[in-house]
Image (cartoon, rainbow, N blue to C red; front, side, top):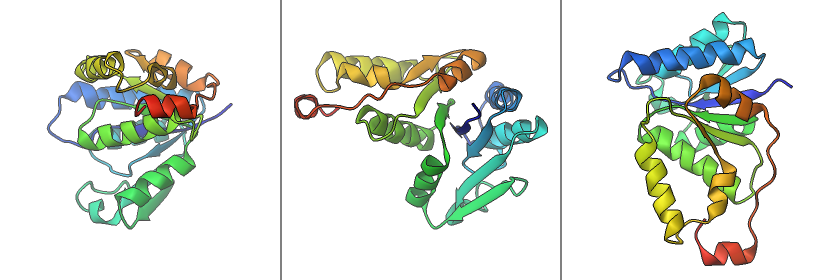
Length: 196
C-alpha cells in the first residue's frame, strides 16, 4: 500500500556529500516503491536531494515550510504542493497530519526535535505510524547509548524501543516503514513510573 513518508533530514550545506547522497538514495527508493514524500520544504542539502530524487522517480512531493524559513532554506518551489505555515509548530503539525510514516536521516537539532516529538507521541500511543531512524554512518550512536542509559536508569520505559526502528540500510528502512505497526500505548502505571 502506498504511504506518504515524511523524511526528517538536514538542510545544512556544511555537511559531507555522503549525507546528501544518502538522501538522494532515499528519494530514489521511495519513488521506486510507489510512495509519496512529505518534507520540510527546503531545496538545499539533504532536504532538496530527497525531494528531487523522489520527483525524478515519479513520486509526488509535498513540502511544508514555515514563512520565516522560506528565504533561509530556499523553498522547494518545484514541490507538487508547497505549504507555507506561520511557524515551526504549525509546520510540524501539518507534516504529521499529512504523513503515514516517518523516516529520520542524520541531522541537527531541528531533526532531533522532530524525531523526539514523533517518537514520544508514538510511545504514548497518540499515533501508530512507523518511525524509523536510518543511520548508516553511526551519527546517532551516542543518542542510542544515551537512550539506553536513560532506560536502564528508569527515566525511560523499555517500551520506547518498541516504538522505533533503527537501521543502517535504505532498503531495510523502507521494509520497516511498510510493516504494519502494533499500537504501543501506555497504562497509567507505566506513565507514573517513568516519563516515557
